[in-house]
Image 1 (cartoon, rainbow, N blue to C red):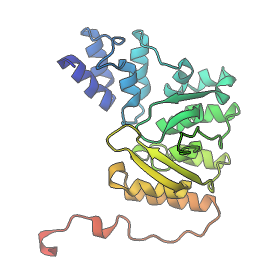
Image 2: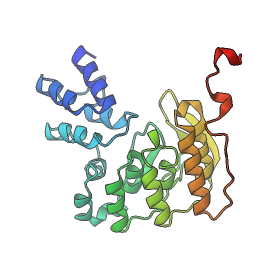
Image 3: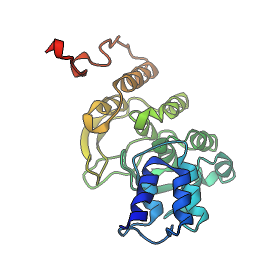
Image 4: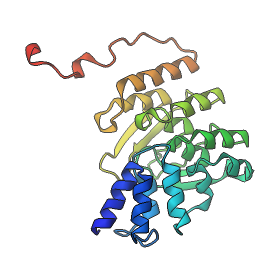
Length: 250
C-alpha cells in the first residue's frame, strides 16, 4: 500500500468526502484493488457509521467503482425514492462483509439497520419488507437474526431511530437465537450464545464493542417497554466502579 492509498484508507475511516475526492482527483484509481480488495469494499467494510457515508460511496461509484451486488446501492445511499421505485428490493437477499452484526443471506432491511440508514428502512417497510425476516445461519447454526438485532448496540447508537421504527412496525422482542458471531473476521470477533434482542443489546457493554453505557441501558429499557415487561430503575449508569478514580480516592 503506497502513501496515497494509505491516505485514502484514513479518508474512508473518517468518511472524509473532500479528502476522498482530492485523492481521486490526484490519481488514485477507484477500481484497482488495494492489497487485494477493491476500494469500494474497503469503504463499506469500515466500522465508522455516519450520514456522510452515502456521499463517499457515491463518489466512488461516479468514478466507475461497482458494488458486488448492485441492488444494495440504494440502501447504502439511503435513497428512499430509488427503493420505492423498485418494490422488489423489499424481498431481495444479499450477503456482505460486516464488521459488526453479520450480513449473511440477509434482507436489505438488515443492511439498512446495520448502517443506520433510516430513510432506506422506512421505504423498505413501506414497500412490504418483513421486519421479522431472519438472516441465514452458518454451519454451526449461528445467525438467524432479524433486523432489530442490528440496531440494539450500534456504533454511537446510530441505529436507535431504526430500533424505534422496527418496534413500531411489529419487530419481535422475544426471538431467541442459538448465537451470533459479532465482527467475524476482524480483530474484535466475538461469538455470543443464547441471544434475544435484550441480551444482544447488553453485550454492547463489552469493552471491545466500545458502546456507551447510557445508550445501551436506554435501548434495554425501550426493548423491555416494547415487550410489556417491567422496567427497573437501573440507576448506576454510568457504572461508578468503571469510572476513573482521582488520586484522593485511592
